[in-house]
Image: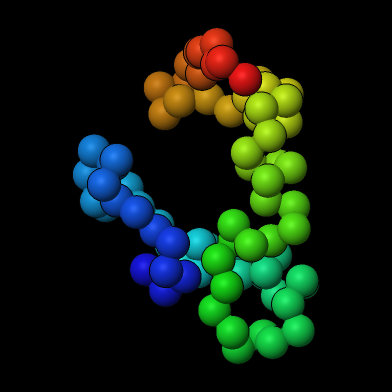
Length: 81
């Protein structure tokens, strides 16, 4: 991990973890919002991260576009929020 925020404790296998600094689209997105292109920043600091990746309503709308490796749609689970 280069960003300092990766946590593998809840993963089934450590190989599932990919640091945002290893994903070129994340790096490109961070470069759009930071003046220091050489600074290592985490994608969670991007101004759009919460709205797109954490917001329940955004995730519900986007979920229909994603499928499991087996081609099945993900099952939505009710949350308390």
